[in-house]
Structure formats: structure tokens, C-alpha cells
Amino acid sequence: MAESDEQLAERLATAAGAILLALRADGLEGKALGQAGDAAANAMLCRELRAARPDDGLLSEEEKDNVARCRQSRVWIVDPLDGTREYGEGRDDWAVHVALAIDGVASVGAVALPGLGITLTSGAPVSLQPANEPPRMLVSRTRPAAEAVFVAERIGAELLAMGSAGAKAMAVVRGEADIYLHTGGQYEWDNCAPVAVAQAAGLHVSRVDGSAIRYNNPDTYLPDLLICRKELADEILRLAAEYSPAP
Image 1 (tube, one colour):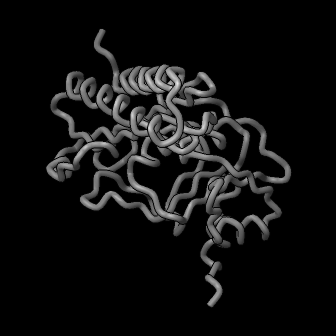
Image 2: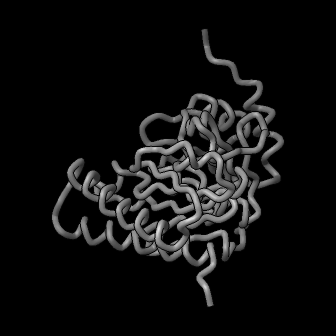
């Protein structure tokens, strides 16, 4: 039987994670480890995707972009190592993203969390856990978004600092947190796979203005993102709209 898109995404994300763990065990550290990991994981992912799906487009953080992909309906969007800093520091909050966007929609996704030994996929959605009380909101370890802090204060949410975008999104999927509100700018490879997995699990996913997120654009920059439990979405979107930076 032919390998499905979901099976392919899961297999490759998990395999890239194994490559990254093996490299880290070899003794490299910091920036050198991150560069080696990015290169090795990217080479494998791009080679395998081109072999398995030769008619599909491909967008990777570590490959020179070919905007001809924008004319294709099916485009794989990958981040070989999301959270390079955390990976180089020996932490667990980093990820591998393998996603398939179909007609601009994040349709298939796998997010490997190699440090935790798990891969979450849109093909096998997890059951959402009970909400945390008070709610928990994930923010960047180094630069928490002012909008997120504003919203958290008004809903009484506890702020949790974490590394990569994939790790944060999957923490919501896994029930460790309830909200991931990001307004510091990302690129399509930062969130396409996490969005596919989060949507499949039954979470709310949108831009911070409530609009849908579209992929396979000529400009791959995505300014903002909200992944949260559906029952919290309306209030979070309302409060985010009220936020205005201090003059």
C-alpha cells in the first residue's frame, strides 16, 4: 500500500529528529551544533520529499526559495530544526516540522519533539485534556510579545516561557498550556505543521485579527498567530484587538 501524506510526514519528521539527536550525542555544542543539525536534517528531508512526491512543491527554511511553487496546489513546507538555540543548549523544547499545504491550507502536519521522544501528527489527533485553571499562556523565552502579556493580565493567565514555535504549539495540543499568542513575526515553516496538528486536535487557529492563515505565498512572512482552546478564542481575539502600544 502506498504511503499516505500523513504517514510520510510523520516518518520524515521522526527520522530528522533521530539525525539531530545523533549529532548532539557526537559532542558538538552551541552554534556549530545548530548549523550542522540544520544542514543534515534539511538534506534528508528535501531528498526524501523530492523522491516520494516529485510533483509537489517544496518550501524549506534552509533551501533557496523557488517561487514557482506558488503555481502548485500541493506544497510541502518544512522546518528541519525549529528552535536552533534550544537544540544547541541541550534543551528539549525544539522541534522538526513537516507539513503539506494544499491550496494554501495547512492540510497535513507532523511535529516531532525529539527531546521528548514523540511525534504529533494531523493523521492521529490527540484528545484534548481538561483546561488549566487559571489558563496558561506560552510566550517566548527571550522576547515575550507585549500583546500576549496584555491579554494574559486581563484574563488572569499564567505565563510560561518556552523555546521553539513548534514546542509551544504542541504544549497547547498536549494540554500543558491553553494559549499560544504570538505577534513577533514568523515564517510559513515556523507554523504550518503546528497549525495542521493543532487544527486536527480541535483547537482554534487563526491570525490575531481572527482571519484564516494562508500558506504558499510569494512572501513567506507571517506576522502573527493564535492557537488556543476554542472556548477562549473570542475573548482573546477581542482583547488583542483592544491592545495598543504605549506611545
